[in-house]
Image (cartoon, rainbow, N blue to C red; front, side, top):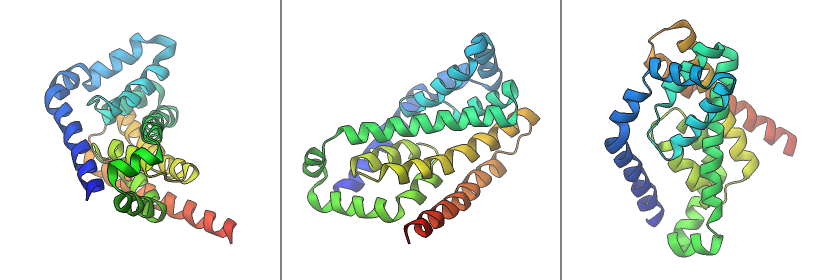
Length: 210
């Protein structure tokens, strides 16, 4: 029960940040504002984009807008890869913060029962949760931090993170480059493609281990 309360509480905290700062940041980082920000960063625009996406762990940065702007500035492939890398950096920061809590502290905080329950869930289904969550609001941060807290396998986390982040980066960069407005299609593709990629990666891991 404590694990559920932790995830709900963290999600509420993130949503509170959205309510407090989203309007201001969305005005600053509209599509045109994001493009201007990247162009003003000159040759370091790629790093600025990654930094913005990584800061989404703490601030309500409109990640899809930033990735679309990267697509306009760099094109679908390079912009999508930069966007995907930014999403992966954000995920790794969350995972690392979760791992900073020692197992002893995590057990006392969550309780032995919930800690073991969470560890079992992420050992069996964490890959799916991480991959799918990348296309959803607030959940990526909650899932990444929780994965670290309950000691999800780092290699499995990184594979799932890549399967979820890179397709999302490429899809929204393509939308930005082509100036298309198909958010529902983009979200659908950002969920379906990670599932397919992680299914393949999971099967390959099991095949190699057999």
